[in-house]
Length: 453
Image (cartoon, rainbow, N blue to C red):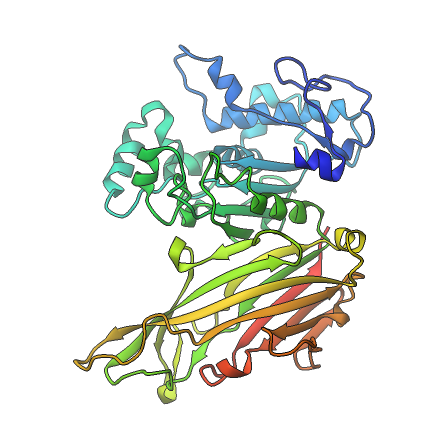
């Protein structure tokens, strides 16, 4: 409902919807149809089918969504440029994906009179895009669930999901392939919860376990190549994703932002000379914690940390000349994709820059091959600093500034070697702060920015 208050949206409930939550066939909307908020409750129809022999499939819900969107378009006057932004929670995200991906959906007899309604963006909260995965040791329970399919429990098994998402056996369940000339992964955002302890349903949170929101595992809650954010929230309830400040701030920037930025670490080479590294010790992997904040917001947009089992793990192997390199030596390590909103910044405060801060902590973890006891402390970081970014409100990428931590009050201007800007897209390579450069060779942070509509 904050969209109504903050963005001037029109609540259609009880005004442009019937008593059964169906859009009226025609209406004269008060104001701009682009700012109307509609709620599709796919589970309402299920409650009316108690006692019916066949339990509804995801395709049935997607069919009802297609009809609902068509009636929405009629209620808005059928403008030629009509598109919708879909926002879905949990299984609702799979219904939305079925609508977008299923290649047989509009061949159903009930949908033949309808044309697909174009979709502009998709935002999902805690959706099991790779199905429901139980904690380690309970794989047998998944097999029984998918074999028996009691009360539709196999809906989230690989076979059923591939059917309603039109995926073959070689494709990953979280792969997105639109059935029509609709959106691609670039227009999708997935919000991922990491707080399993505060989920209210005891059985599920113990079956799924840590590294989840209490119902959906972290590794299952995103679409491949989509933008995503990790937040310390449970699947639902008083500490849930949907009613969280983190969820709302990510949503409004995804919907209304005008700058998209992606932050990655360049392929990492770690020098042998690490603090207190003893004979017989080898680096096994690097663990990366990331926090992303926007100036003026009361919360982080993204939180990936070891305590939530959501930190980033980068496997390491021994390289040449006593160094350590990533096992995937040419792969960047993606940290975060976010969105900045210039209009709100210009209106609420008059600052000439959009400002974000990215806290990065890199901790090496070791294997011990010798008998000598280590003299180092567990958790010693080889990088632990905050990068401050400033993007001009007028979106001139040539005006981007940065600085690390509190080393200076003055922002730095990227050099010609650090910045490549073409056709409204910028790629910036920022070197690590001075106190961490001894541990890394030819590494740094990569920032990619572009206009977002």
